[in-house]
Image (cartoon, rainbow, N blue to C red):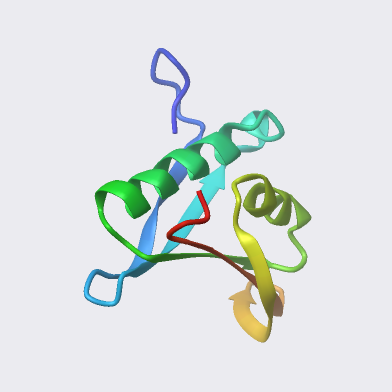
Length: 109
C-alpha cells in the first residue's frame, strides 16, 4: 500500500495459499500514521475481489488477535464474516493470544 507519490503506508498480501483447495489467508500491516483512514479496508476489498474473481479462489481467511479490535473492524467493513475464536492460536512477544477467524467466500461479494 502506498500513497500517491510512493510513500509506503503498509503491506498487504496472501499467505497459506492453496490453489488446488481454493483458499488463502490475507495478511496486512499498516504504519501508525496511516491508520484510521480506511486504507486497509479498501486494500482488503480490492485484493479479495481479485483473489476470488481473477485468481479463482473460493475461500479467503482473515485472522487476528482478539486483542486487536481494529483488525476486527477491518474484517467486518471488508465483508468478512466472523466465524469464531481460535483459542491460544497466535504467539506474540507477550505470549499466546486467542485469534478471531473471519472468512469471505465466493458469492459473498
